[in-house]
Image (cartoon, rainbow, N blue to C red; front, side, top):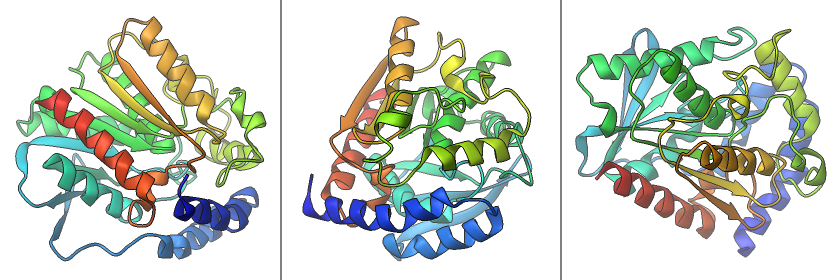
Length: 299
């Protein structure tokens, strides 16, 4: 673990983690998280960010440098289904665009509690349908997401299967939240070591997103879905995250279902550390691994 990564974890543990644990009023929490944007770097001037709308869903295209106009990474930002935006993940987006030469479509899906489940799933599915209707081919599309956005990416893949739509070529999931029942062992065993999330925060965000609905429903918790027939996946998670067990169980279940999954457990890395690639070397290394996976699968 680099000194810079250790420092970032130290800072988040004493600031953002405390804010997460006191999460109650979503509007106030969103303002607090917006203020944490200082941990991310500014976007370079040669990065193209173009707002768009697909099937009524707000999105933005992010590109940098030479780009294959036919290949798209559809990316779902994290934020516990209650906060976050394409802007909060733009640093990660342009770095992936640069390393993959793909177009990155950042989906600004609707957030809870104003728009509870299944609004996010509906938006994700609509965007994919829109891309297919616009002439993009499934084998040139990849899905990606972090935290709740990783769970949304996985749930959207299940939903595409339900509708009989072709699957994207592959998917990359960063610290995915895949079990809203919070049954993973690491929820308890890693709660002290975890630098960002708390069990209480996860429970609050799950309740804002689901209301009284069953958290074990597969489109809410993809871990409990039928995972056969999903595309190849690369999953990243930190060894001290409370969501580590979500990633491990999902990876194992995909393999048991006959699918293809790669899992990288990053030693002591904080939740979605890739968004700090401007500040920590591990973030840059992880993005290279993600890009290599995407380029190999979409070649």
